[in-house]
Length: 396
Ligand code: AMP
Image 1 (tube, rainbow, N blue to C red):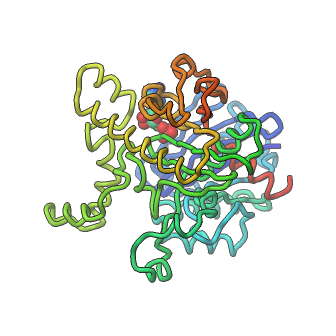
Image 2: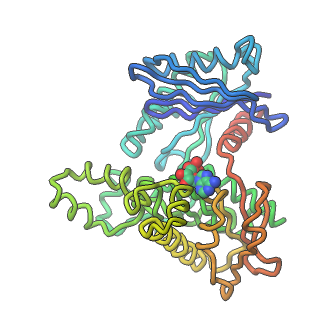
């Protein structure tokens, strides 16, 4: 059975075709710069293909994806009817969606209603779904929300200390992000622990260019670092994470920028990049080697914040079975991982250097065997999680 996973943005479509019988990724790629004069498409199977061509709308992008998937030469399916169902990643489901659901008109309207909470993402998702419905008539579609895993948080964790009517009128609260990844790695961690997920307390540390940490209590999200938007929480590649909110007004007064412009600076020009000019850890480590002090400061600041959140969440949970690292930095950067967790033996948190430095990409522990809190690395797989959810929702 083949499931197509679609992640449509405002001007892009990421796609992946998975064979659910084997769990293998059959094809994947991205259509970019939709709506611009010249766009591009990549298509990866055993080999890689890229092309430049204009994609006036998402429709042309999706048509080209189907053409490649069914191409006599490069294709991995003979007919598009071989695709059993389509799963869509949706960034924001607000308080409307607690779990993945099959798409119907009411669900589509719900995603539209959440546009004020994710103005950059949800409009693209709606277009992606509508295009898929048009090009795959009769094929069932499921939506999987980045926010739904965090919907189990209690009000004490998701409310902000601002006038209550802001929540009532506009839904202003913490929603979290990366929920599909946190859910996937929490479940895989419980498997590794050999413990039922419903009895496991896990701190999930998703460290990519965007990054967030969740406290998972008895298998459910109890707290998470991202906020109303994916700008809050720990320090990220280009995003500032939690800061004193008065900073927005402080910068606006001095630069003459509007609040929205300041937020753009805090989103695109801040975080690691704001401190040292680089947002990729590979560059940052290379510069630290050359004695660059700002690069060292950026790394130390980011790890400092991760430690703070892990510490806070350990207290919130009371008992921690495991801490799991995932995503680009979490999976690849042993220095970052060690920096986040070193010197915590008194709290039962250990790192075995040998295991930390030689992770072989299979889900495994990197803590000392006698460490009370297990530390592990699990490669996240949001697309597989979306495909699994699609199969489960439709009972395929
Ligand atoms: P993601 O958003 O999960 O794709 O993660 C992307 C980020 O992972 C990049 O910006 C890098 O900072 C980091 N990254 C990727 N590969 C490596 C690596 N080999 N070593 C250290 N950091 C890495």
